[in-house]
Length: 289
Ligand SMILES: Nc1nc(=O)c2c([nH]1)NC[C@@H]1CN(c3ccc(C(=O)N[C@@H](CCC(=O)O)C(=O)O)cc3)C=[N+]21
Image (cartoon, rainbow, N blue to C red; front, top):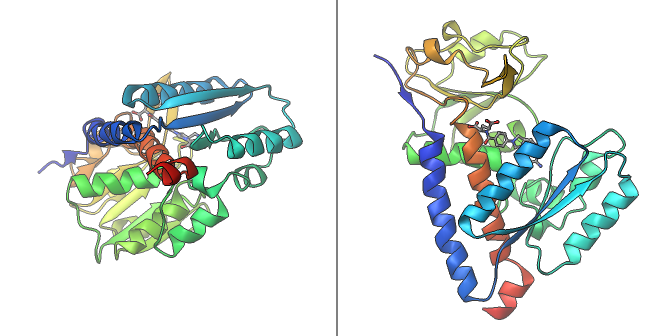
């Protein structure tokens, strides 16, 4: 029996529909949700991601303010820009595209963002809320993964989950979200011994490496009937590929996300959702409603 594709395009479309109606409701209260995007430098991949995010905003009626900065933008200048956006009542969400060039520290930068405008869920405040099960603005990629589990009605309670990633943007927040759903979660990384054993013991595997030279999740690492979520993105001969040997793994798994068309579109959909949430908890909204 072959497994089922988890379709991130279908699920992200349904999230976007919900966001669209929420935007309409906000408009009735005089609020047009606005996302400020901050892009430093001229990496073409980052520029494309930001453009895709802006386009998705336009699709659902969220406005964007585009901030493109030169690659030598200083930390001091960045701090002033974040302050400015924090104090601008017409801006509801702030997205600083990562990675940042070397002279800019990611934590210094993201931790300055007002927790109420932190649509990536990266500030200490929002990380703290998430780890105590009270998260409101949560990182987009893990939220998107949780949305896929909900849509396909895949239960998490009591399941063994292996997450191959320990980043602040993906692995750590996903660990907390899945723990909240009563899964037994293991985080694996480059120093983990016997990764294959963890994978074979798992009902659910989430992989986010993005380097095919270093790692490919092959079917011999997957238990019969397991659910496999592929967050990896890499270019192979100009083509976008994930971490998973999809064609072979799907023969053994119950569900697999493809790349492209899996987690990627969900990440963008959840950014839209977070921006609407941020607009709903903004000072102007609280005052006008
Ligand atoms: N502050 C910040 N927040 C982020 O959420 C963030 C970031 N920085 N830096 C980079 C990563 C990467 N990321 C993706 C978003 C969408 C797709 C996506 O839509 N992918 C499409 C394909 C796109 C293509 O063809 O290139 C898909 O998988 O179907 C991928 C990757 C968000 N990130």
